[in-house]
Length: 341
Ligand SMILES: [Zn+2]
Ligand SMILES: [Zn+2]
Image (cartoon, rainbow, N blue to C red; front, side, top):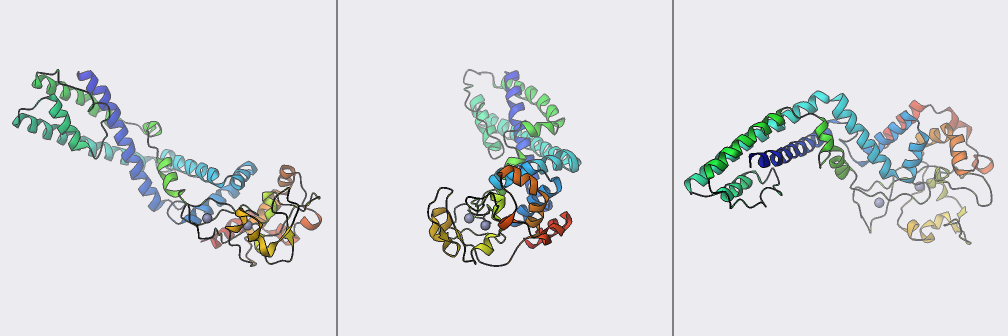
């Protein structure tokens, strides 16, 4: 009996502590951690900054193809660094505090349930019911509360077993390590991903820039983004040539040029009427303007060869990179991200 309670209780309590710690840390990171404490664009800015710092082309491609996946990878990496390296002591003290809170709660629940059963001359099942109801906001007793203890006649013996069972549980909790956070059902990175990534992820049909709306499904409102990119980074090129399209979407939609909506389209559509080109174009509001983030100019120059290899295209002729772009430094590129928010 005692053994049974002990091993089950160990699991719930450990789990409860880890869940509470994860939730507590998520709140703290959302207040203090620069990448997580702002709006959607702020997170985007930090993802882009980290991509530029690492200069890993494959990560850039993941970001362009599947921005959500790269953002989730960013959150996971930052959380890991925060709790296991940069703020290890803070994390440990939160874990300890949650253990302390739960120990207090547990003693209260043990006491309250026992008192009630004694005054009402109840049995083991009543005790468990009481005990669970005191803790129900903090723990879920899926295993033990469903067990039937009607065969326990000697209540004092039962209580003795419970108390004996909990002592090592509490001792074990006091020595809980950070590694347990990794095994928990609810992980800190997942809590943050759920909170931070619940937004629109639809990408621009030309340049793959991510819509910055904070609502997942915001129809009938248009998708939009403050800064578009050269559409070549998404593989756009001039049909029948190897020439990348280097124009920003915001320039294209103001031009008299035309485009093929799909790679196998037979008819072109004027950029000025891009919305008529099909459903994925219709939902986007792309305003003609001259806003061009230095970041993407730097990116094209920095990864020119890699982009050429990746798409089997060339930055030449109509797709030639303007020479002014080549003077942008990485620092300037990163600094330009401040224009996002
Ligand atoms: Zn675009
Ligand atoms: Zn959107």
